[in-house]
Length: 249
Ligand SMILES: O=C(O)[C@@H](CO)OP(=O)(O)O
Image (cartoon, rainbow, N blue to C red; front, side, top):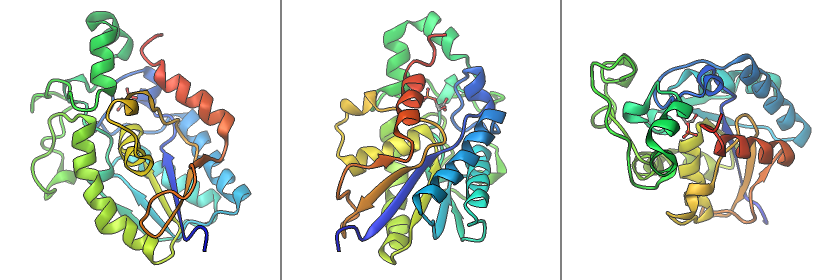
């Protein structure tokens, strides 16, 4: 058997705060009109490729949930089981949550801005619990394992996401299910880093576009047999470049 397992990764569609160029993290914003259209297109791309998800994973954030719902509806798979976990949430952006990316770049300079956005192990300053964009008292996180984060770097995301990959997602893959994971720019960067064996330095230049399914064929160790493919490679390249240049507008 050349490709036992199929995994599809999908970053949520463009959100209201992507559109406004604000650091988002765990702030629960909704899809923009563009994001809704991207989620539709993602469903069409699944149809065109003959891919049929058997189980859906999402974060606890509305933009991922909306994307999953729309995509599955278009793909005529709205009936499949859905599993939601905070472990797939976007990286908590600490005190940057709610701040304008262009203003932050102008205020702190390119090096600090890039360190906060893309370094492996330097988190932004923590958010105060009384900040309007804190999740310290958000009822959806009651009972999560440990405290609600006040900030996270990519390494922190890997540390909370990968155990779930091993405990839950690979279990569904092992049963031969086609798994669709609808999550976020940085939680998916964390998973792609693991799957593609990307170094701590090189991951800085990897950006994931919104709304375009990325398909992995995995072996029995749940590692890629071949490079993953975006279902619309041209749009994916343009989308990734746009993410990389955020702040410069
Ligand atoms: O603001 C965020 O939460 C993320 C994703 O939108 O942004 P960035 O690409 O800057 O990590």
